[in-house]
Amino acid sequence: MYPAAELDIELKLLVDAIYLKYNYDFRNYSPASMKRRVLHALTQLEVATVSQLQDQILHKPDRFLDLLQYLTIPVSEMFRDPSYFRAIREQVVPILRTWPSFKIWIAGCSTGEEVYSMAILLKEENLLERAIIYATDINPHSLERAEAGIFALDSMKLFTSNYQKAGGKSSFSDYYTAGYGSALFDKSLKRNITFADHSLATDSVFSEMHFISCRNVLIYFNRPLQNRAFGLFHNSLVHRGFMGLGSKETVQFSDYAQNFEPFEARERIYRKV
Amino acid sequence: MATIRSAQPQTHALPLTVLIGASAGGVEALNRILPQLPADYPAAVVVVLHQPSEGPSLLVEVFSPRVRLLTKEADEKEPLVAGVIYFAPPGYHLLIETDGTLALSVDDPVLFCRPAIDVLFDSAAQALGSKAIGVVLTGANEDGAAGLARVQQAGGSAVVQDPADALVATMPEAALAAVPTAQILTATAIGQWLATLQPGGRHGAQ
Image (cartoon, rainbow over all chains, first blue to last red; front, side, top):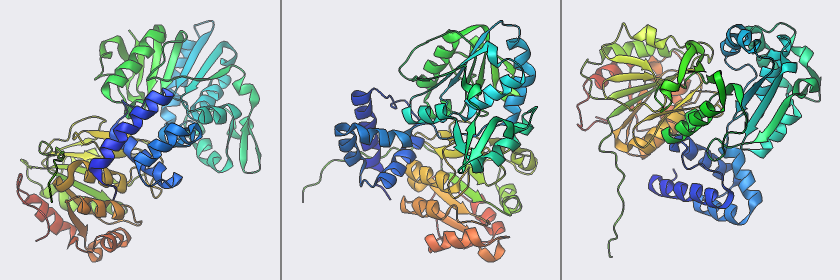
């Protein structure tokens, strides 16, 4: 077992080094998950200690990119938590429809599963043309993959099942072309999607949003960083704009508890007060 | 040889914590353990049970009428409190931070499991040291074995359900292969033993 006392020290030094050198700020991430991810990276990158890894990433930016793949938000599923997307379709869409055009922000989009889920949902509601979707993440490799819109073919069974449970109106296979073990998603889905680098830890408001979906990102943040993210969301949202969180996330214990009201409480969809 | 000063880990404020991992047959085994725990229980209890990741967990509904402790699904950042049973939410790993709060993650499944027993036990070994009591029950895979070894290496106690008493012996057998010195007890006996835990008292193999 990796010695625990040394690990805590090395981990702190590593995240400080990453921040000072690359301006990626993991200093306010929950330590237990960071620890797991870094230990996993040590094994995969075949480095003996966190200190050695720190030495490598400081002197070789490519090595930092390697490490970043292990530190960022993991791959998701399309229509993960189908009831969340069903609630968007049934409860949120009728209100989005009242705006002549609207902006959606998928914060921490990783490899894009939720972005395409949202685009498909909006297309089926005949709203995709009126929407601008911002998909942001801190990991450039994830953003590239998200933009490519290519997913493993063997995931399609699960994604199709999720899509159907989420109230999909068509046949899920209409949205992709299969080949060579991959599913390439319909390019028209991403016509109004902007993929961009954005950090909830260090960057600021960049546009006015009507709906922000940020799911299973905040569970990795400590309270001060959660507050920072909620502040960004609050300042980005239009009057009565929506915010969707992961099924185990809540704004309730944050500094912004009074600034949001539950809209669809079970699905963690809130509305700016 | 000269001695040098060294920072000591701060675990004194954390509660004694029973960590239970179970898979196939786990509800029945837990039902022979959890109802035996007394109302003024001096330890926190954290349970990872493999189950389908979809939909809400029914574990709280199933166990709350049968046990004398407060039962709840774990929320992120809540502090471990003695006398409470926490269940890992379906689809999330459950971890314990060194400050004694709970953390959730959607990182990749471990041995196809999320929540994974190994993830809970690894983090508990780091955070709780000798205040961790790891219990591996019935199940059809090897999750929990590596984690139980870490709990024991960090000074905690290791208990494994007697494979002959388990509905599926694979998981307890794997745990025993990884931790040959673990206590081996039937589920009923595990419940009896856990019920006698004393606050701050020495626990572990008898």
